[in-house]
Amino acid sequence: MKKRGRTILSIGFVLIAFSIAFMLISRLLQPKYMTDLEEGSFISQYYREAGDHDVIFLGDCEVYANYSPMELYRDYGITAYIRGTPQQLVWMSYYIAEETFRYETPRVIVFNVNAMRYSEPVSEAYNRLTIDQMRWSASKTGIIMASITDEEQFLSYVFPILRYHSRFDKLTQEDFSYLFQVKDNTFSGFQLHTEVVPAGSLPVEKILANYQFGDICYEYLDKIRLLCEENGTELILVKAPSLYPYWYEEYDEQIRKYADEYGLSFYNFIGQSEEIGLDFSEDTYDGGYHLNLTGAVKLSRYFGKILKEEHGLADHRQDSKIASAYDKNLRVYDKTIEESMREQNEEEDN
Image 1 (tube, rainbow, N blue to C red):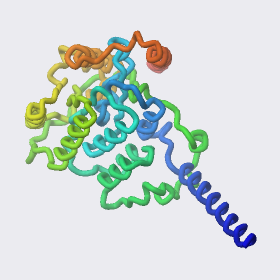
Image 2: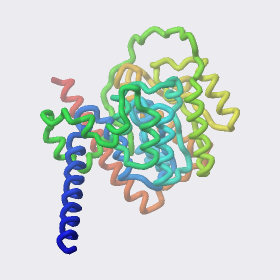
Image 3: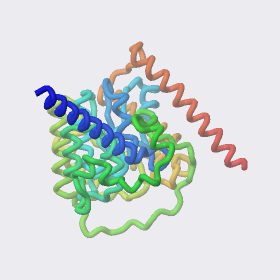
Image 4: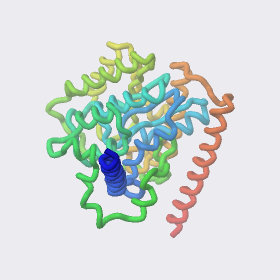
């Protein structure tokens, strides 16, 4: 009996050691998204700051490039985090919102409606940038099942080694340095760009055969709305002031109708660019697709005033605990801006 017990114990140790080694190798092979496609690391950075945010932003690049939580706090004392990822589709936003409520209950969720134009998964590459670094939960299982393309397999998300086994000969020091934790490359989810690339000629606006949003988009927008209602959170719909892709009037009419039907606030900032003070000859880093830092500061100040005056969000700058954390982050934020501007000026001089 003792021998049998030792045998079982030995087998158990071997299985545990194998499992640990398997998980470490899988993690090693999985891209870290630090120097290439850094947007893939955005989702994981939230977990270090989760809790006590009044506002959570959901959506694609139109949120993480265009709104700065640092400016919302600096000017209004509003605490916010952007849970944005590239090509974040409506069902992705729903499952990220569902996961968020496991960590905190924000006063407001801001959902950028640009994703309503997409009724099908776009590609595995975009899926990976959102899903790979989510923590395991029912929400991650749900987002995988809703997002995978016909060419993908669910198990490749459970066991990344099945997808990334060919990276063995492509590993770099980055894979080892960030094996357990990636570094922050956003400020509460905001991707900072100080570059200036003025808006020039944009693609011709196409006439579409069908402007109707897909049923699946409405299905998940309903899910987001009901999830917010269940948790006592206000849902606000926004459209960022990007010049392209075009936001058709037919799109706008559908969102306004939905907002009116359910008593939601909808802010389309495209038509308010002049009031916001945006100048697309200097407030964009990629020719009008997204705002740069100066544009994001203007939009954040404008929207922050709305959040404070029309939605009653509190000013937390007098809360010593919150102020201590944000003041520290603001110093790093301002220093990063200063360094980025200096590097940019040096490049221009050369």
